[in-house]
Structure formats: structure tokens, C-alpha cells
Image 1: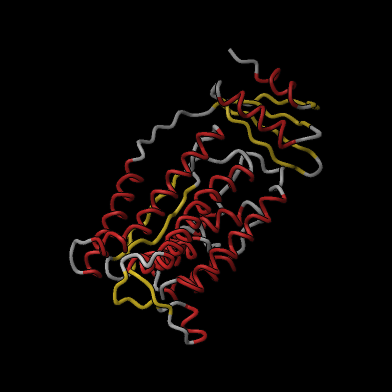
Image 2: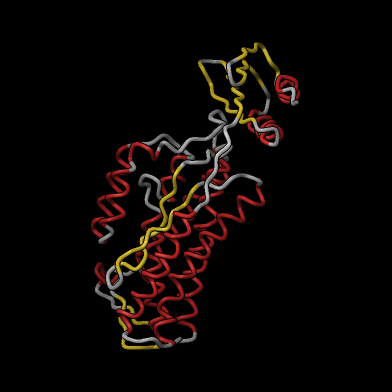
Length: 316
């Protein structure tokens, strides 16, 4: 049987200890809270315990509780992914008119961001040895919005703000890189040119019409979807990134709902409203350690890139 108190003392200076019904509570100190807690977490998780740390006044309070076994088949996640793929396939058929290479070219960027987002999220969790949060793909309406994006719930609390950020950031980065590549290939090689004209936000602002192929047309919808998911609304990827840096503000949800409604993402806006209480909500086990500075810089770079892609190529 694991000696929890002994393991805690290996990583922290312990000033006091309290014995709870299902665990322990320690008053602790460390010169590097983030590293000490992460090392302790990895050791205790193997033994069926889950630690959490918070600051209470000038003190650091570490709780170690026996973890309840959770069973989750992930069936809802899988069904929603299939529904999202189906909505994209139907949208291609609705807009292109029949099964053809044109239809596949239009659908490819949207299907790619679903695959990239979900696969990279799981890869990050695997390599960092953390349990992934629950991410649900939200299908759209064929002929209008084929795919709305992702909603993430906080079923599994990330270890710290860095882990929360990484699990959300890298899937977005991979998806944006994929969309940018599709747009480049569509213009560079003039892939499957058809009578398509993209009416982007740039078109609305300065009156310039951007021509393209069906390949670019699909990328335009994908760029818009990713921009919407970068908004700081509840349980959107952008909301999770913001929550890793600062506390929740109702202004974030309000701004996100207004922009989503303007772009026609009414269902996603309603989901954000309904999930408002649970969203921030998004908690970490280590509430003491701040997000690293380089990750804050990476967030703003990604935000600028997603906005630039949307404003130039996004479908409106």
C-alpha cells in the first residue's frame, strides 16, 4: 500500500497534515510548485490517488484524495464525429450536385480539420501521459454550415495550466496549418477550378472578390470554422486557451455569441449560452502555477493567424 504522506514529503516541505475520510490535506511549500506537483501527480496517479493544490491566503494547501473509478465508453464522442463527417459529406453533395472529384476536393479541408484536431489531441495526451478532456464534434447543417466545430467539457481536469493549454493549442495549430496548406495548394496549382467565387470578409470591406477553386471553397469554410472555435466562448477551444491564462469574464461569452450569430453559427452560440456556468468551470489540479510566458505568446500568434485566414479567405 502506498504511503501518501511519505511521497508528498519527497517533493514538498510539509508544515502540517490533516487526515480526511478519503484522503489527506497538507500545508506545503516548494521552490518550484509546478515541477513538484507534476512529479507528485504522476507518482500518485499510478496508485489511484489524485492530488490538487491551491493557495489559501499565503499558504499552499495540497489535497490528496482517493480517486473514484470512472467508466466512459466515449460512445457520444464517436457518434458526434460520425455525424459531423456525414454533415460535411452531405454538404458537398448539396453544393456540388453529384459525387465527383469536385465534391471530394470541396470536402477534403473540412474532413481534414476534424481528423487533425481529434488525432493531435489524443497524441498530445499520449505523449504527455495525461488523460484527454472530452471533446465533442458539433455537426452543422448541410447546405448552410457543414461543420460547426468542437465543444470541450471538463470531465478530466488537466494537471496544470500548461497542460490545459497544450491539449487545446496543438490540435488548433495542426488544423490551422492544414487549412493554410490547402489554401496554398488550391491557388498554387489551381486544383479543380470551377465557377466559384469566394465572398470573404475582405470582399465585404474593400470590395475585392477572391476567385478560387472548389478546393479553396472548402478551405474557406474550414478557415471560418476554426476562427469561430478560436473565440473565447464557453467550452470553445479559444475559451479553454483564455481560461488557462486568466479568469472567466461574461464579456468573453457575450462577444463570442455576437460574432457567432453574425456569422450564422446560431446553434453553437446557443450551446455556449447553455454551457456558460459549466465552462469556466474548466479547472486544473494545480491552481497555483501560472501559464508559461512562451505559451501566452503562442496564443496571440495563433489568434492573429486564425483571424488573418478568416478575414482573407473565410466564407461569409
